[in-house]
Length: 196
Image (cartoon, rainbow, N blue to C red):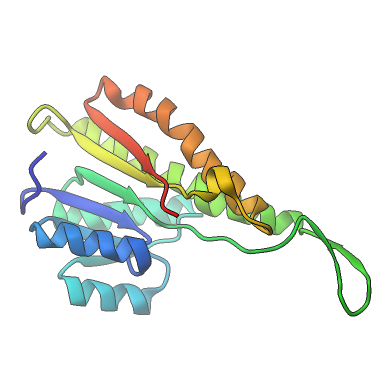
């Protein structure tokens, strides 16, 4: 797929970090980019600086993701590229002893689940929407689209306090090959990068 102004892309978590770097790289080739991010102030600024559009999006919400994709497609057309960079985590040991009181504290399960929902489920939620849209499009140069997921070296080499983050990123790695196989007959490529 040639990157130019005929191609539309969505970058989740595109207002900062790796996501913003991806937006800039795609825009440098003329690609029409929609930045999906939760932080409206940072997202609008990134869109203004790069010439992209901003769609406020909470990847934890079906409704928010659906609205963001609808807006992006209304402005830029059907995306041929999805880059999933939205995510994050917290550094909390599995169990720890408070240095002052000696009290033993456990990793709160609700926070563990939140990290999984944000990273793994949020990525999957965006993939399903993009894949369904790409399947409706005619192939360009033999392919309908490209999906790139962002995992982390923590998926296999997590550090202390990264149990939730490591599990979430390993989930992204684990689901990518299956999703790639699911979508290969539809001429949609799916890959994962593991920075770190």
